[in-house]
Image 1 (tube, helix red, strand yellow):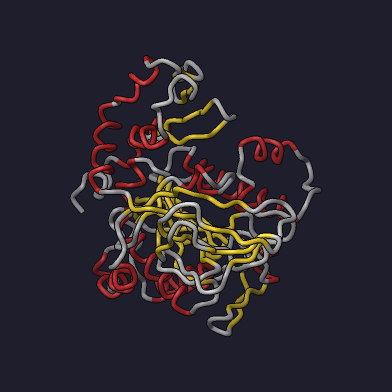
Image 2 (cartoon, one colour):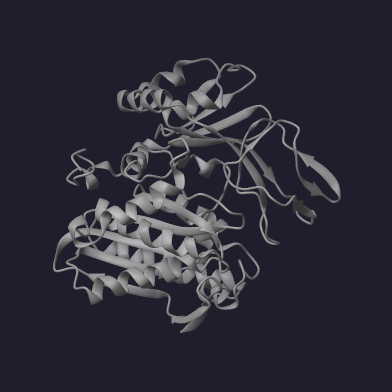
Length: 403
């Protein structure tokens, strides 16, 4: 066991990798909550312990199984984001394959942490019944209103639309190797929730509310078994001035060895103008290249992402994209000049931007593709929808749209 401290509560608790597990008496979903993937984010850990303790003490009837898992427990013990490598940037296919070939984990501390997490998640997927729901709980270094990060599949959208918090769609295009992206590539419902600033007391409160809502929406517990309205209201009041969905339009990535420092006072979703100074890099000013809303400005020593700029996604765009994806209109894209399938699986397209100059990222997003720039001329876009395990969820109340 390791001891984890919350500055917000001025309290410490002892935890194992599996914080807790509840197995219901009847069949139902399997929920896998992770928290503390970053060791300076203990809020989700304390919220999960609180919720599962309450479910047990109140004898709340549970359908299916609930797992609460701690991420980087050695970093949690020391209250640092990570030791040598960001555990939430290590979940790339080649990294996982390498990890499983090793007889002993002899690299850095995060190798061991990832190996343990992988073993637990793999065992759950092998032994338990679906439908599976993966939820990763986080906090931010700057003050923020709560929001959900989600890979943009219709399956993820359909489930997360129940929450009264904004969605940030498509972050996987900018953050490589996240745990959620790895899970999403397996086709399951998976999303993250950012509740607030690392050491704010309200972050634990919002994490707690979010966990309860997730248990209800997935069908693990009944809304009549808890004070549903109060948990819903906690989140709703925090975000009622925000739009439903946003996308990233700019990413400022910090280079290795760069001395990056964000100017004080910026908060998530705050409007910014083009040309506004937001930070300094090696003592030189850093200006915003476009207008929008600032997102996740970095106010901690460790991290590779200086800031993002996001913009609202109009509701009509979301509706059209859902229609196009259901109709599988994307298959006509390979008939266009400069566009071809990467393989016979037809889940990824190669785009020669010298020929297909009209093929903007927004069009691919509309069709359900995520993009990766190979070089200055070529773009590879991968179908997000092809891997979704829709059949696993079709009997769920929310999937039938009767919640």
